[in-house]
Image: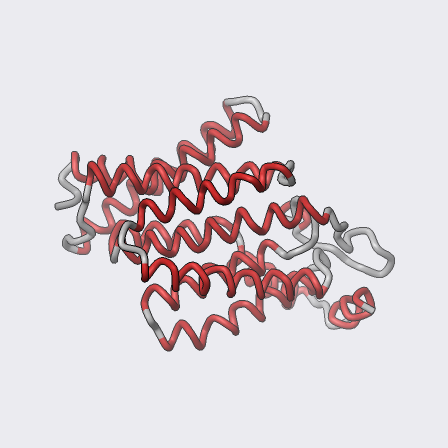
Length: 278
């Protein structure tokens, strides 16, 4: 039944739709989330940015833990299924990481800014990315549905707790502690990345809150300067470590920890040191 639905969708394949859905599916990938999150955290409102990171990283850990628990295969290679952009279809199939990440990012944004516009855009973004995963032949419908539900429900639940908690940093650290038992089921490279990102976020955010306390204020030229400098440094760390160091789990975990720690704590300190923050 699920394969028949994928085949039905793929009967409309064309070069134009291939290009459109390839672009749409990129919304669910890490670089889109990183670009949005860093701009908000460094230049708009670090409190809102911190909550968005909290919702997205928690969702990411849970997504990969669930994937590793069920270990369900993808439709890639099934008869009559054409799979595209398979290099980004890492790990197991259930639930869809792209769909869940899109849902978590947009839901967290809508909650953080109490935005009706974002609240309206969120279901459309989730629907389009979910449809792209079926069109590209890398997920089953149940994967997409589960990813959408988890990606919406996790930030919603966290937001209620976050608003009622005075010490946000303590809540983040407690959440990290509660996520630690997922190491019993999480054994994939993607799971390691997610846990490393959350760990770097937790301790980077703690550093910023306790010792840095930077401001997002500044003229547009200052905001763009710290944004572009920050992205350049993160890119150098990401690709430098990726190409210069061994591709082993420990190094991958360290790389993602550093990316998150730098983005949340060390780079805000650097912005202040360079007088790019007040």
